[in-house]
Length: 320
Image (cartoon, rainbow, N blue to C red; front, side, top):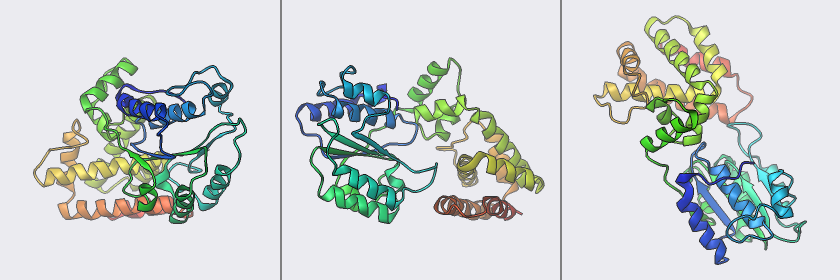
């Protein structure tokens, strides 16, 4: 697990260091930050510091604990996350973590449980975590990571020390990504990735820029001609959750243009394409399909047994 503090995280890290130095760090820390913001690296730094045998406000990097952490073999660190992207954390996995929380430290120090995508816990799983947070074991710290607190069980949120750091301005993110890649990056790449620097960088490195452009071209061609349903469905299935999210942003942009505003457009550098879709699809259909798309994304996440291809194809067919 990468351990790092990025420039835009310095304020949060300094606050945590103060709490560590004063021995006032809460037993449950909740960090709300989008994926690709560097949140995992930041919380890994916190976990490594808590477990370190020498350091108080930062890890020494040389003790046995630090070396075990760097090797991803620390016996007193436990990572809980969904089994696959977009899926929920089950109650059985949480119960196993709860049991671990009460065990004795194998290195005779602190224990840390990091719950990645804590906002992906189902109600039963969240309630199981809540019981442990209400009566926390000694020498055990919980670190919860979420994209948003809004979808989490309020009682779980209330039991945590909450942190919601601001992401840097778009221009700062754009400069950082370009400096990392030694290349210019379209502003809409930053917006597609909700201003998260690492997500924007990974978007370009993974080739998603080309996949995104190809999907938008195929979609605009389909809604204009009502041909190419099979090909477009294949592209969407191949792109997974990302492709559906890209179309969600796109339809929202179309809706804004149809309502006479260009403020906050995600696809700010693809205006001709957005306008083309706006001319081809009536405003009432755009609103209906955007609502249906959001429900489709939710349904596909909740149930692994659904026929994704059939459901995506049905949604696309409704544009006709």
